[in-house]
Amino acid sequence: MFLRRFLLVLLISACSAAAQAEPREILWDQLIPEGWDPWALFDDYSDEEYAALSDEEYLALQDKAQEMLTRAPVNEALDDEAVKIPGFMLPLEFDGMMVSEFLLVPYFGACIHTPPPPANQIIRGSLAESYELEDMTRPVWVSGKLKTGRVTSKLGEAGYVMTLDVHSGYSMKVESIEPYAVTQ
Image: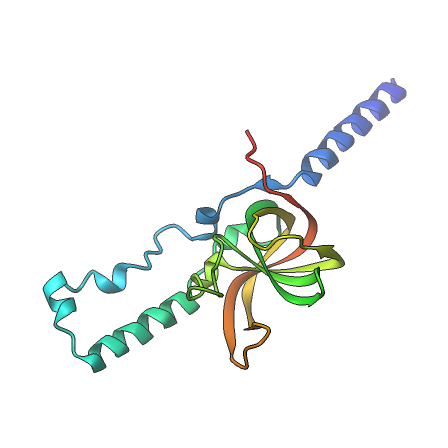
């Protein structure tokens, strides 16, 4: 009888540990809290009113929009959750092609060729061991424990003096990176 109970407890523990070890696959829209609408700022303007804004009014609206994106709220329910998410790696700390710190973004060119996405669409990743990034233009799956909280990263490009402050709403201790492939 004791042996049966012991084996049952052992089996349940093993199944529970296996279930916890597998990260939950998420997509970028799940990082956005329900009800947050980044376009709400523009709802007060008709097309005619928007077109009629003076330069000063337009710049003030642009600053207000950028501030809203920088302070974009996060989905607190994902704090401390083991997740797997696809995206594009933007190296922050690297030696040649070996990356130890990076930003994970939802689309290629974010922060380099276009303005940064909202803070709740950027994850700052850190690796215990460097990862060889063969091609920045190819998406990857990144797995690890997601943490909510603001992080500001300095992003610069070789050959340029200018740097950009990029605000992320999430960070992750990355456990694995693998080439992107659609999963069923």
